[in-house]
Length: 416
Image (cartoon, rainbow, N blue to C red; front, side):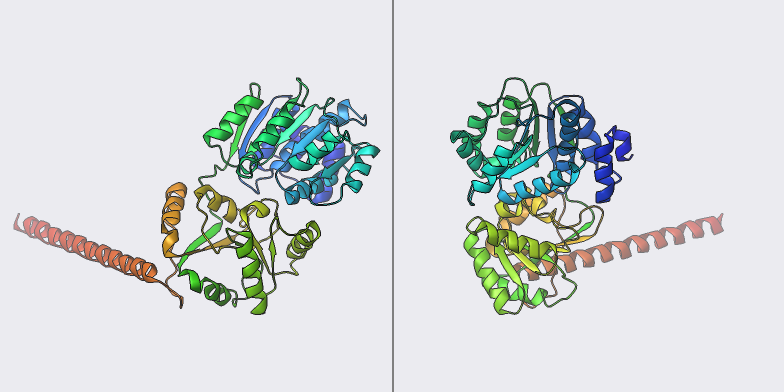
């Protein structure tokens, strides 16, 4: 299967070829024909599966064939500034031979450049909820001519408390439009929201959030809270960790860890909602071009981070929501490349680890050979040793029983 088989128009195929893309990902292969047929879509896919192209390519094709007016025809609603920028970069790449224009709007920056772009006329708008509603209230934006509405990262939208903004935006949409709904997870509240928005949708599900890809090597380090920073510095002495995305639970924790690593001579910056847009974008750019070795992020900020060939993800603090673990480590091991996911686990995080292992359906290997191992690690080590000892004993007994059985069978045969 290649992109030509999806009946995409020549301007899009030319742009894809220029980007070096020849083979669609599973979600692109399934979703693009559905969107081209005009059907509503419910997409369940992990990060890194190529879902942006799954909705941007068919939207561009339909707009190219049916409309070149300056009204806003497609709205892509996304939770974070980083993700909005990333989606905008994708549209910029794919639309270059179509004559279609897009713009990206988000809060935290002066609105003038955004309103100037809107005045110039765009067909595609990529937006975060707050700034979108603000500019609608100022009469810079009308959604009356909308043909396509994409709700991206719906689960993260709800996590961030955007449900009321979403409901307000839904009331402003025309009755007739095509809706594309994407979420990495499908808990009951997300299904309820999807059911309220979609009309006879077709569902596409790729790599459920309860699974982790085989190309990611996972491991657990048992370590007490106060020694986590020492273990992290110890691990980062290894030059094979070329680029690492480190997750903390809080913004304060991310800033503190960045200062600790910088003091230890390790290039690191934190990225989260309290940083200015310029600071966040600079850190992300430096990390993407590998001039910055370590990027420390909270879960919300990391949702917009997409880095090619990211070698390592480290869970400095385990998430209390098991699905979040899958999203975090899914930042590495993409497009068939190998990746490494390391998790630190202190005694208070043991329930989180148990929930994670239950969700992914397997035990994460424990690394016991490190200088900061805790009692939990020693216990896991002794339990593993005992398990090996028992299996060896069982194997020896089996061989003994088999050999004994063979002896009596041979004796019986000789007697006959």
